Length: 296
View 1 (cartoon, rainbow, N blue to C red):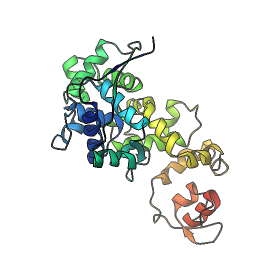
View 2: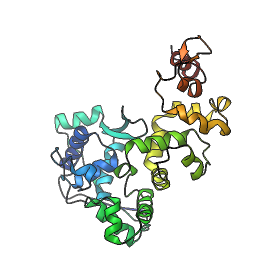
View 3: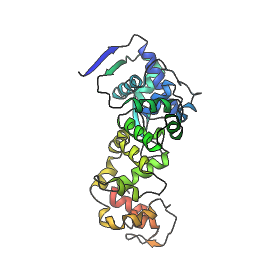
View 4: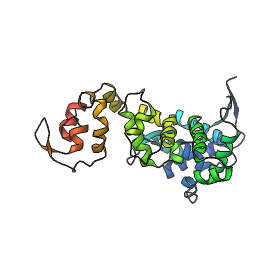
């Protein structure tokens, strides 16, 4: 058992350049970058077909391409960074070393890594995945396969859990962000129902399950938000938010800082919004940053 490694016969340095150029151009996560390089017809990838590198690794399967990307990350040529638009998901960005590889045409030897692991998704899940890769949406897949939409979501959830898909490929970014925000503010052992109750009614159980199944979203939170994670784990907000009033306070969670400015900062007495009152421990942004992070 274990990994069976075989060296590439093709120009692996050229493959490294293809991946690095694509990562530099499209600013995508690992899954989406792999799909882009494979030339996926999924709607969230196909619209990038005119960009450099689309289908550049067509002759390789997704698992192999993911392996190439992981090797480049381990070598320090790419790194995960959080986007300015969505703090709960990362994209791959070239490091200085990665930029140097492209600028100086440095040859990088990659390996094809075939992982010997049990197949954990069945034929029906694979059929759903194939239809999704062809660009079909969830309702179309359900119609073609004569299965319920909820069953297709079950397939997608298992595919996500097994790292065959990313939740970002079929769930809107805004929905993922809301789910992760609520999850971060509830105890780790919270039930699905508790998360659902804190979210807008239009967000479904199916979407929640798929987002929670995405291990890569968890990794981003752990790797790139350690300061904030420590803050939450220390229970800094627990003193101002009991489980009984959390649902009520979710009303102000997505409010802007200039909405309902009817309160005063408990530190400096400046006017603050309802959001700050409920979610910044009754402080303005400046006092909150000083209190929590020691920022000046």
